[in-house]
Image 1: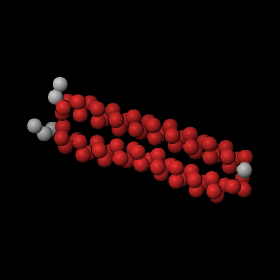
Image 2: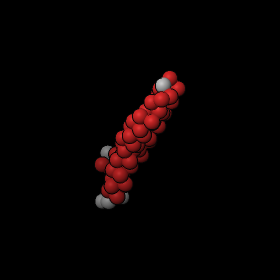
Image 3: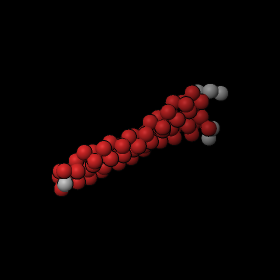
Image 4: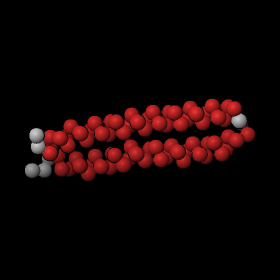
Length: 79
């Protein structure tokens, strides 16, 4: 199997897995933050700040994978 064929299969799968993982991670982080705010409303500002920073790090994974996908996409058609 040529490397172009492997890239053509692996790159979209990697992007999909990263998106699924990111969605699950953000869902869990936001859900836990909402529970924490419900238990301690006076700490809502600190919890929300930490949640937003954490969500940015989680989303960074998907963005990095997408950038690598775009970079490798040009190599799929090259001979």
